[in-house]
Image (cartoon, rainbow, N blue to C red):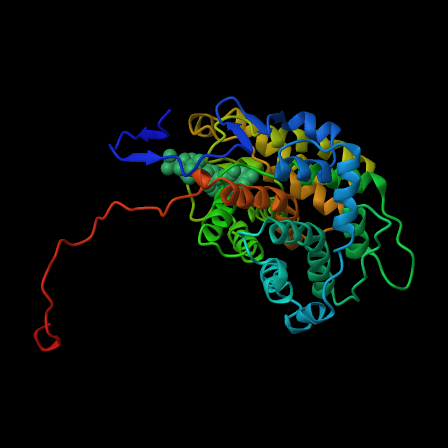
Length: 393
Ligand code: SDX
């Protein structure tokens, strides 16, 4: 109850902070947002409702949801000068640095919502981020394929708007596939928060200096890009493509993993907290079958993924290390079937994780007891010694 865990090595590892937002039991494979189990939210709620729940602590009434939706719709446009920001990036840039730069630039354009101590400014920054990140993400994709940007269409939902800005063209009307919108909405719910993971801790740590919300979120996007964290969904597809290119032999690949060949990991497997099946992965796997069938995507990679999972779940090497599929293992297959290129997968993760990042940042300012303290270290360097002149070295 003190939040301290004494490790075998005798070091005391403290919990990084307290929070009332998300509960995870890694051994039982339990995940709840504000007390609601993830499978109930994924099956019955929408991403905007879950965003409201994470940020304000309760599921919204219809009136609250309508007001939240309208306020967000009013801010989906980017400042015209910020739109020109994208002209300066090389077409072949990975979309993650483009997105994190554009999000950080919001601090320059919206100077009326930077003060963490002013609840009105925090609320305005919250709504602007939820509204503009889908537009920024769609523009990063359009830039990468050299196509014109589309303005948001506020008659659509947040997710439909994002899909239309991403895959639509000014020259012709674009019909959003309701099945794709529904599947993407559910995937965003599954990614919406996850306690003190690397990127959320980054948002908290940057925010703990009273840096503004935009710049704190930009830091979280950068941390998420790492292939051991959010970048894993891209790395899973690259791994499956590599296995397919080598004839689809999962057994040979698993041998290389177990031999710990340099850099060969079973991407999408293992987790710092879950030492059981990631509850999100189970939901995504079920959806993958349904969505791929609906989209008519007979994806050989899904069979390879299932083959890898089958081998891993029956192999002592993985069982002893409690390595199970995590949220990233199957999501990429669905994103690809939806038409997203692999490099956009981590941007989609950021879109989902945004409400969680915002909720943690706001919680830290509303309840300083939840603030991450300045981390100390265990010093292992030299004891004091005297300076040696250059001539004597
Ligand atoms: C996310 O924290 C969160 O909540 C993150 C996240 C979120 O929602 O925010 O859930 C999202 O980041 C999911 C994780 C995505 N990353 C990957 O899929 C990359 C592959 N996974 C590994 O890099 C690894 O599993 C980690 C980093 C995710 C977790 O590492 P752990 O649990 O701290 O385990 P470890 O690195 O200490 O390894 C323990 C053993 C080692 O073997 P030994 O040295 O004991 O012989 O397990 C092995 C590792 O070599 N191992 C793996 C492995 N992961 C761990 N071996 C092969 N493939 C893997 N994926």
